[in-house]
Length: 126
Figure 1 (tube, rainbow, N blue to C red):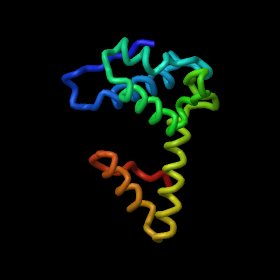
Figure 2 (figure 1 turned 60 degrees about the vertical axis):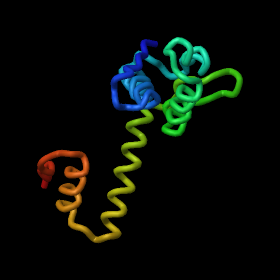
Figure 3 (figure 1 turned 135 degrees about the vertical axis):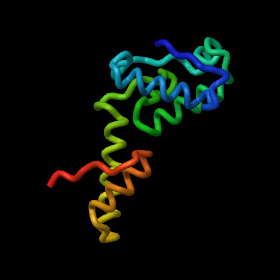
């Protein structure tokens, strides 16, 4: 597992680590069931506080990317791409809320595109 923290990066160290681990899981470099280094060892290797690495692991566990098995350690979660599952769930929640608000789907797409930082909304496929 190749992880690096850039001190000059304005992104907090825990978030830099989180992103890198997610990217490695998505790319298949870290596979389901693979054990991650213990928190203390990874903190020592990267020159970080133990709490920084622990926070990274907690965030990843909350997102379903990893699972902690007590004293056995932290492992890449099984069950597909957790980020895709979380994104799909968020999209479902958004769509349900739009329906409750009785907003036009085109307006909803425009709002979503704006929230994602896109300059124009995707064209509808009618």
